[in-house]
Image (cartoon, rainbow, N blue to C red; front, side):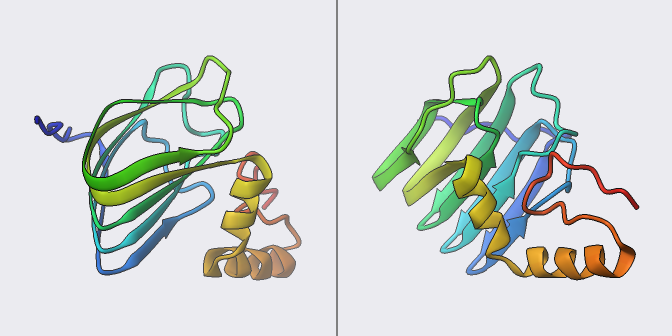
Length: 156
């Protein structure tokens, strides 16, 4: 079994016995290295700022962890380069059929990767502290919340 070499330009996310959520417009990167041990990581990749013209790559190194990916509805997930040890799987209720691709390449040891699209992704984002903070900001500034639907840009 080989492990993917992390790129210096990749967005790095590390969670150890914690819950880490990156929601809304948080990055423009197309490479992500996710290392999690007994943790939960939620990555929102629905932003219009992410360039889906080329494949977006997520390199997980999960041990007893869950990675939830919030994706646009048309993104196809390629998990061919994902290595599992013990129990684990990729849960994707509806596969994307568009030209945009998300490539998963890494290791999962007794963990799982959940893919959420559409309304399911929106509900996942709405059930967070970041969404509540975003609602308060939008109310205070007279704008619209963007955590639940990052395809909308802020007006202020």
